[in-house]
View 1 (cartoon, rainbow, N blue to C red):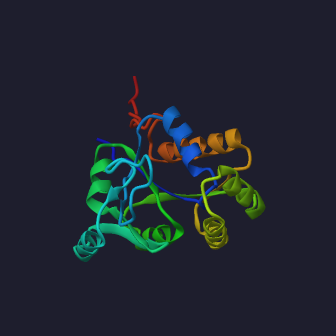
View 2: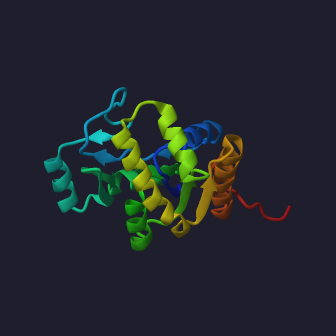
Length: 204
């Protein structure tokens, strides 16, 4: 069976990454999320094992000590980590795995090169537009918005470290670009856009 491809995706909060991923994953079969572990509390509507594996800090630190995580990082006082066994198990089934992580975790994975991966950064067209989107959501306090903008500036400075940079200015265009990247990476691995392996036929 063909092994799946790992895709590392990072983006500032409010860049539209979730919307892009939902559309592309609905269009292309064989794509799955890697569910990260986190010490933060669940938000409204989040389901354990679907959105995140919600664990205690003690549990997280024990997993970290045992080398369970491919990468981990502390963000806004909470710990986030990617389970190595879980990702390898998904890839072994032939599914392409999308790893939604911040720039810290992405840098760790690129440096370690433990698993071959394609790295993508989703960027808003500008910080001004990002601020407009964050305020338009109406879900964050002023303090949270300012913190997200501060972090976004730092994150966007790391965008050039990624193989692919997608600017989410026009939604449909950004969706097309993300879809094209996945298909191109599958083609590089001698696979069809569906993710299935290409069987080279001999002479008749």
